[in-house]
Image (cartoon, rainbow, N blue to C red; front, side, top):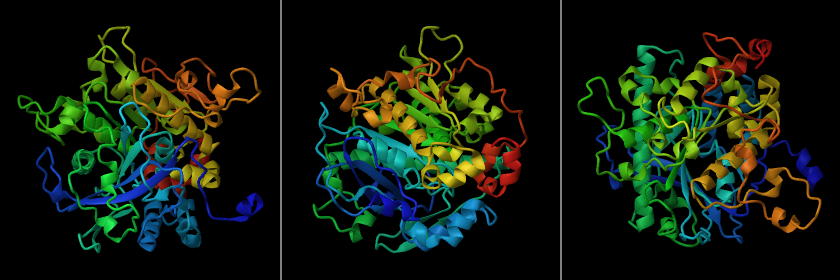
Length: 513
């Protein structure tokens, strides 16, 4: 069987290493059933997301197609997004039949497992995708978190950052496609205005998703357009989450994202925490929830925030300078950055301009207590911007040849280990890190049984000591910019997000990427 698997040319995901099976379901809810904490005018009629969750051990439902339906339209959109001359685009056009059959190793619409936590509820995380992403494109990292005992919500943003997305009508028919919106990556008035517009949509969507989670947990009836055509053995999908997800208590939800998604989460938690100042005439908030809204109560200094390859340009807009200068909410209390994690790829570490902006964004404010913890900041050696998404693990031969990325599966495991440990340090109940992820040799001895069960305190992954974990580099916000590469007008990492870099193999190879 193993030999036959090697002969199968279809890209495949590795198994999740957590102790739980993972279920998944697609959700699309009409916005008129949800309460928004802010006024927003748009023709977007639904909010869409995929849920990854621990499911019962006996679950054997079919897996989820990585390329959503309608697959032909999605594959064509990805080819356009990646550029006609890029390596990925050629793969998409030559081998589309292989892409059709890539499956996420989850159980569709499986039954939610009863939470073994003290609260009898599963912890919840919302994970925002970056440019070129979707609700499916970070499935391995969010599925890995779900396998360790989390319910993870992966939004499908309708701001034009996905190659394509679809807004469906209540009758289940496609109402409108949302095409990719090409915006330059070099700062200008027009770019800031466009990114601000995208962020307004993203922040509004996140607030609606938060409201949806509250309603689902409280048992409020909601319509799920996707479920109308789904085969569900146990009835209403939403009902099995009722009373089983930790979303009502302030600070109970974790917020994470990659690239533009990380920028989205910075803007979201700070907008809700600080809110608009009516006396500040220069600040034009992109998201201004009322002081009594549920999202304002939800986001506290204790809220875990995890940022993967934070892309800082979208949060540099002159209209939101007042908010940019505010520290992350965690620094308003003594525990400081203990619940703030930033993981860079090596490519983003070497992008000096973005690196400096990232460190400024997450750093402890000048003048705070010297004993207050700063953020956890790391990068894996030989990792690329795509290493934190599904592309790195599905197409390792491309990311290795073009970007020099190595060990894509291990890079994702390191990300998950760090995220789990920050959650534990924030008193979030998640499962033990497995011996497979810990990279320990099993040699027997009196503690062998305990090691085989994994460990509940993975101290090494957050250690600042050199070589505590192979190839896992600790960084400090007190350090200056990386000196490995000179600053450039258009960084390779910037082009990665645009997709154009995939057609520029020669120039990037010459520059070390």
